[in-house]
Amino acid sequence: MRYIIDLREGDNVMEHYLCKQKQILKSRAGKSYLSLKLQDKTGIIDAKVWDLNDSIHEFSEYDFIKIDGTVLIYQNEYQLNIRRIRKSIEGEYDPKDYIPSTNKDIDQLYQSLLDYIPTIKNTYIKKLIKSFFVEDPEFIKEFKNHSAAKNIHHSYMGGLLEHTVSVVEICDFLSTHYEGVSRDLLLATAMFHDIGKLHELSRFPTNDYTDDGQLIGHVIIGMEMVSRKIDTIEGFPPTLANLIKHSLLAHHGELEYGSPKRPKTIEAFILHCADNTDAKIKMFEEMLSTVPQEDSWLGYQKIFGRNLRRTDF
Image (cartoon, rainbow, N blue to C red; front, side):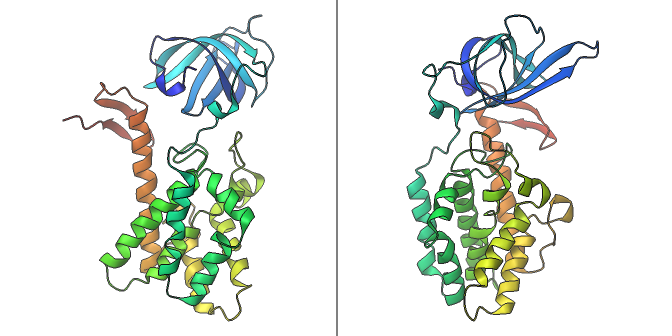
């Protein structure tokens, strides 16, 4: 198996990949060509079919296909120039090779999350956390395996859990580093902040935005999920409920980044900073992993708006 992460400029590639996206576009000269996104468990690569000849057989999005092509670099990113395509035959590929997943132990990650629950002192917050992470088998199953994004950061099976654990760990440290912080409130919202992604994004292999994701988004969806659970806990303090909901609504920090509210409590602000920190550093880490170890400079990265460098001193 020639994994995408191992492809280099000039490589000739004859391999099976999952067709993540398929578009028929027009060149400036008016000639039709195919623009594809191909995936395996190590990542996604852009691919182009410039010559739609008899060697390009019929296939659809989310088909496994066998391609024959060459790797080149376009705008500082690897791209496949494909000459031949056919649908893969069952038995020629192992589906597990095409679903990206965390390299961490899922059960250990989840246990590290559960280990925080006994440290929560507030009875109502503890009941709320347990209603999701201990008492809801369907939620637990989905949460363990879901991704945290379509393609930005943690966009693989187990990515949502991995990201959540990181955010909780960061919040736990910051809760003791500064005064006036409710640790219970902060850790609970750190655990809940992205649970709406269970409905915003579909399962693998599609891992794409659902109607709920497009029309509502995970920030609102997650807040509504928590709100419904709160309504089942007798005597849950209304002010505490509003503080939790506010942190969830404000965790993207700014209105232009999809936050219905900007952070107005110290817990909401810390959650936003922790979420942003883990997401941005993970993006940097993933970019480093796509460039050969011998290359110091990664090239211009659109998402950061700058050329990035590996620390190889």
